[in-house]
Image 1: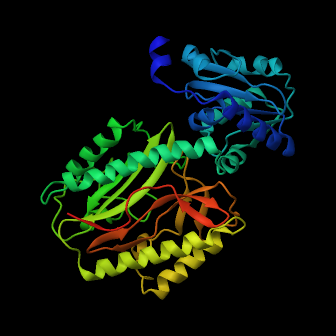
Image 2: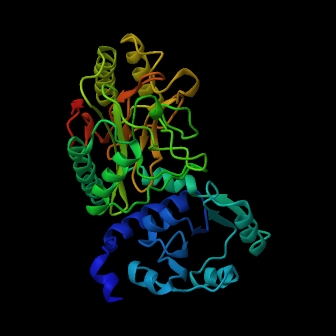
Length: 400
């Protein structure tokens, strides 16, 4: 294991222990006798490994990690007691090892495939199975100082990508060429490449780098912009379209360091943008300022969203805010951390209350189907004084 030991940083034991203690308190509160964690990102969060494994978490005491592949690597990465696992049939006896006689078993039902659920169900036909995915998502919404430091590291990568744009962006180059060269900048600085999303069928690779109308082409991705992509099988992100002069160039990338993400958008152009787009960008910055002042501890996410929509309408942006009319999304910010789509949200009707230490990617964008998109996005943290940006890049439109 010398190679692994010299090249991969582990999550500190104290960090994992704090997470486990808070999660176990939630299990006791909700009368869950044992939680079985198997989703990759949740394993990273509680066990410090993303190997194929099951983490058995009792309401009290140490957990037990059962790893199929690679058991050897999982045992090095995670501080918890572990042993190899041959099949799901090992689970009932393993529950006895941690002293569990479960009447209520918790599984991540928000992401667990139906066939997998039926396999678990067959092991405990007379036991109640409940969802603990929501409990984990709520806990993960509040970041620890260690997690915030990892997000700050990711922000350094985002800034380096943005600073590289003026040296790379040229009239006539394709969106795909621009994206690939910016992706290389991120990878050279340690970007893991993977940008996990919890949502079903919402694969994401880096994000969107593109220009003009193709950035705002209709798409399945649940965001204000999706990008045209290169095929019907990959209908998001950069396309083969050449980038023209005087059109908005959007770099909306998710950078990742140590598993944690900084989601950032900046607007560029080759030559000056039309006045209409400059005015829209100024309006988006005003909306952003409204959000950062309002999103304090105790604020309700849906109320902050309503304030953002009202401010955009007052600035004459109602028809273009957060998407073309038939493609518009009903949020202006989303949580970010180990996944792109974490809690909390600033979204229509969202009842969740903001807490200090929550991290939000705030992304007011104006979308013009014939022209493209202008806007910004910062990854921010909730403080008593409002949102503070963790992103480092200049918020001005950069004209090349």
